[in-house]
Image (cartoon, rainbow, N blue to C red; front, side, top):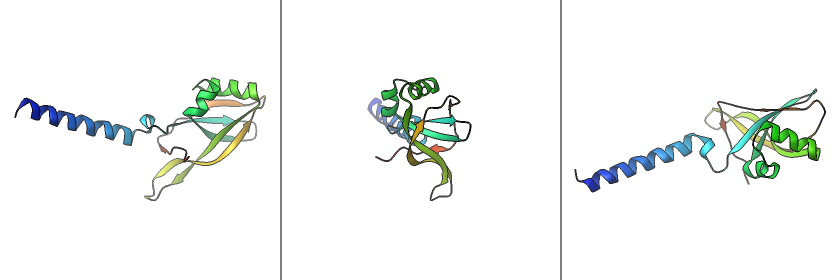
Length: 122
């Protein structure tokens, strides 16, 4: 096998690995959504913030979300919920756009899930 053939095979293999990484790991996907759990005395909800949303609040952490809520009094976000897709697998999907109001007893936590997180449809 010539050096050019080996380089071609290696390049094709690396391209396949990169495509697999993007397809199977949503954290690398361009439409990535970061999930947070918002806890109030009455309710717990999971919200999703896009990269643009996080850029507006100037942070990616639960503390940044909490500070944005405290300073503005409210935050627009996507409410996320668990659903089954066409193949019967569970996934986290956007349900509706909501406004989260600040409260003195409000807590925001990072939310990790093993389920596939769907991006927000634009």
